[in-house]
Image (cartoon, rainbow, N blue to C red; front, side, top):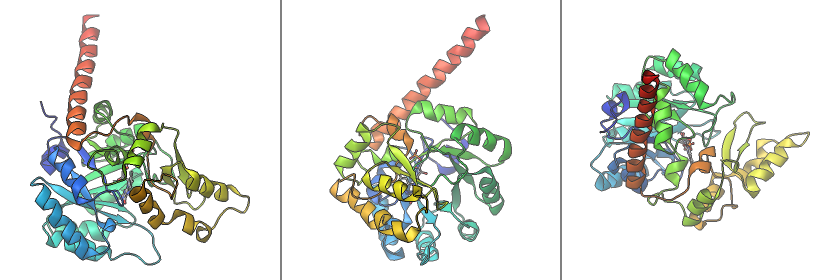
Length: 330
Ligand SMILES: Cc1cc2nc3c(=O)[nH]c(=O)nc-3n(C[C@H](O)[C@H](O)[C@H](O)COP(=O)(O)O)c2cc1C
């Protein structure tokens, strides 16, 4: 029996699982595999060098799947911001109708997407930002808890409390993000009012993920203790894999005089992070990973992963049902 939620109905998908935007990872092969397997795949706009390249990536994805997929637009503070508007326009012109926005000041983008008849999932880490995005017209909120890979914000609120708060405060559907890898997690998110889950790290470690096999195996061999927060002192916290480079960044930040971004720039450059995935050296640069790596024990296809999540979810619901029957008999 498929699980039907506001998310599956709105996006016309079978499994209530979204593959969140992932720099260098959210490319057509993975996105199509997630959508073909019944979830929602999201292309990461900024992984493409320019809006025209995003057009090509959209066309390629469409050749690989006839299912719905979307595009993630990550709005990061930057001295030389990328052509966000160009990426957004290109995707809409190519017929994409589902977007994930993340980061700062999404209002003009949510407005633009809504004017063009699109569905917008806005990802955020606080209830305050979630309510603001709701007012801006977002259709679904992706509530990213402290467990997540990438940017958890600065308030350090874990998913349990954040999701319960979301159920109290939000009027529109929301999905749970950060720390999810299996059907048990999906059911617990739904118990907290979520319409599904968003997963990043789990999808990195699938057959169709474009990263080097060594990195996938490194994830499988790691535990929940193998991530670290960098940029805490710069108030731009990011959870990344604990390796030589990220530990050096933390060491520099912890000096009495702290560290300026300029001093860290070379160590943390996105280009070095990309090389990690290309050559398979986990120590070459910083790369995002969530504490959920402690739950990842294999490298399945997206089809295997999502079917397994469906059956685990069914079993978990059955187990819970049995608990209430047992109680009724008391
Ligand atoms: C390798 C990697 C790259 C990511 N890059 C982005 C990004 O560019 N934009 C974004 O909004 N989120 C990004 N994220 C965050 C994910 O979309 C998602 O919110 C997060 O991974 C959820 O936590 P989880 O890893 O525990 O599932 C990234 C995550 C990973 C693992």
